[in-house]
Amino acid sequence: MRGVHGKFDGFGRFADPSVLILTSLSDGPKHGYAIMTDVAAFSGVGMEPGTLYGALSRLERRGWVRPLASDERRRPYEITAAGQEVLAAQLASMQQIVRVARGRTATAFGT
Amino acid sequence: MTPKLAARLSRFLVRCYPPRWRQRYAQELLEVLDQHQLTARTVLNLWVGAVSAHLDPAWRAGWHPLIRLRRWAPAFAAAAAVLLLPAGCFGYAFWKEAYGPPMPISDGTSGMAFSPDERTVAVINPGLELWDVADRAHPRLLDYSHGDDTVGGANPAFSPDGRILATGGGAVTLWNVADPARLTQIAVLPADPVGVNAVAFSPDGRTLADGLGDGTVILWNVADPARVTRIATLTGQAGNLTALAFSPDGQLLASASPNGTVFLWNIADPARVTRIATLTGQAHGVSAVSFSPDGRLLATGSDGGTVVLRNVADPAAPVITATLHFTVAPPRFPGMAAGPDVALAFSPNGRTLTTIADNTTVTLWNVTNPGTVSRIATITGNSIGAGEVAFSPGGRIVAGAPATGNTLALWTLP
Image 1: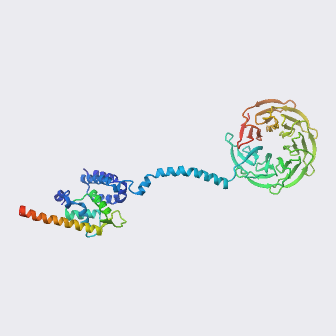
Image 2 (image 1 turned 90 degrees about the vertical axis):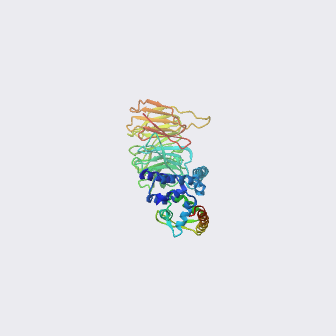
Image 3 (image 1 turned 180 degrees about the vertical axis):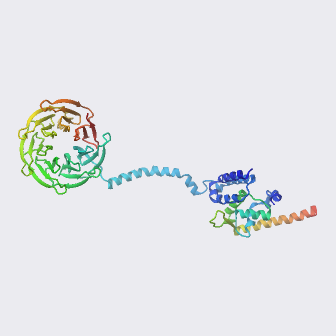
């Protein structure tokens, strides 16, 4: 899977780890490795641990995710209300891009 | 890149994140790395992550006030030490002054004595100090009486077994010195308004003689130091008695006075003490008196620089066998009384008499033949100033204390 989709890794907003993580957390709290496998499963983006935790630390600082109490080494994260709003806005913007893109490519290439 | 190398590099790079970042995320990141398939891409990704975390001001060291505090902790500690050290010193000095035992006050040494085992020296200055002199090179102050103004007088006296020390002063005080490091008072004998200057134990340790300021000698039964009883009061002599000596067999007591007289008392029967001889002839006051170990000779030392040897084999008719002259330092200031401290000691075999005057001149005399006494050696120098001196019972060690200051000097004689 990663072999096929690996080339999207640096591909702008679609590969934005923040969006991917927030999306992954939207159906329930997950710990780090679960986020990685989930993101890989639904988007095909193979996120590396360095990227994941770089993004997680930024999201946490902005208050978009929060860590849950854990007595194990793996700590689950959940998306906050603010995180949900940000994700919704981001998805709306992406949807707008997708809509325009579909219209234009249909006109130009006839797809 | 082998997975093993990737794992090692990844773990190394996790340690390269900023400390605060690591405190928060390192555990989780390592957990994820354990489960993840590690490649060169993982390593590169971690390197980028570590660099960006370092560039992020949020994770910069010193951002957190506590971190800043920790960073400056050595400076704070140094400043605290500089500020608190003088305060602590003042506080300790104040505490010691207010609650600690007072330091011995040296108002001039007036007497000294060696313990029978030669390990301890008692100094009257005018309180009582006990010095450990077992290590001759390093005398060490063990204990002292705390603000006891009844202690004073001339040379104190150790009991023959070394367990009790008697001191003069306002009254005779008996001290338990079995443990010289823990000086404890056993008894203070009834005070006498004229004061007690000289004290001496009988050879069997059962009798204590004390010489009063008016020339009176009192004999006490100290067999039980906790219940001391007065045995006899010997009168007739004048002056503030300076020295007392029992003969080795305990039959005679010699009492010396600053008026130059020495009385010999027959104390064989303490209930009927009689004066059997009055020795005169020394122009200056007599400040040291000692019997030879066989009891046949009596040496009396005078402040004027003479020692008179008498044959007292027949105590009723003492015969002068020799008069020894030694150098006495002149008074330091015109008009100041010439009062050198004179000390005497016979060697245990009785063949040598050692004299010392004024802490300056030690003279060894061959007294094997009392009729023809010869000078063996004179040792001068090492003066520590006018003060007190004492011989060890064996006569081989001299202890000297200067008139002022809490010091003790020891000389070992050849």
